[in-house]
Image 1 (cartoon, helix red, strand yellow):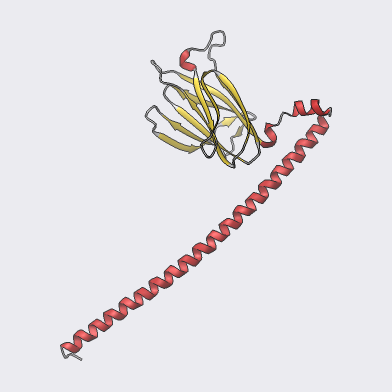
Image 2 (image 1 turned 90 degrees about the vertical axis):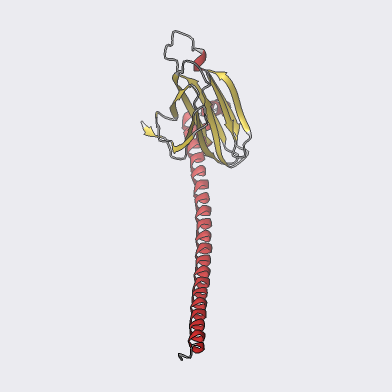
Length: 222
């Protein structure tokens, strides 16, 4: 058991669209997670996916009674949207499904699971697996297609992982540079604001002294 990476976020809404946002810290096995749903509830999970990265997601409603078909109350709607709101995948009244696409935008992609209103309300779980980048590649098919053994596959996976880490390091450096520039800009603005405040304070004090002096001179106290 390992904790789900904090890059994932989960959003929950009821039928009244009251939104609660929190960092998802669900327990998972491997790359899968389990979400608890109830009729009239929506749960959305977002993941930061890089441009041109491949992503694969599979979802299945857990059948509490495997010998029977799922009831209508256990059907869900699933929608995957890009950072700019483009729909990458949409399915209605399904028990399971899969989506595969290459990210055409850089940013948070969101997968929403909607449990439609039903009376009486039903509670159920959804198993969800979402991979992107190196993890999303079908290495078994790659090995079969290129006629390579598993050792070579593992080497390729390590190379891809290294390249991914390398890209992440450059991205972190770029963000660090942007933060440094923001800090310098903020410090410069704060220094300018402090100087303006000081000049304004001294000006007001000078005007008060001048006014007091003029008042005393009119009263012939000076």
